Length: 66
Image 1 (cartoon, helix red, strand yellow):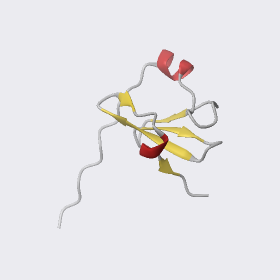
Image 2: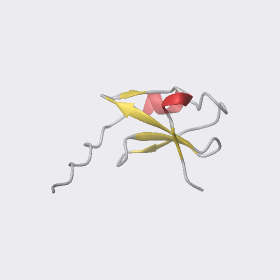
Image 3: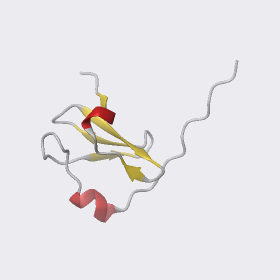
Image 4: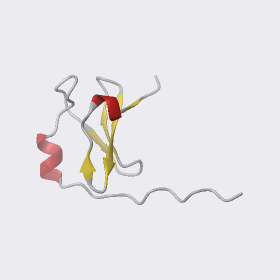
């Protein structure tokens, strides 16, 4: 059985990262390039980036483990 290849890392415009905030806490986000996610440490959520577009919906976010 073969494993699926990891999703390619996507570059996000640094200016976009400066203005985006977590929709739950309004706090800052960290960019996890390897996972292709925006991380809200205060909300413990990871927002996916699909086709270069951040999906900033709490219901689409993945909960982070402690």
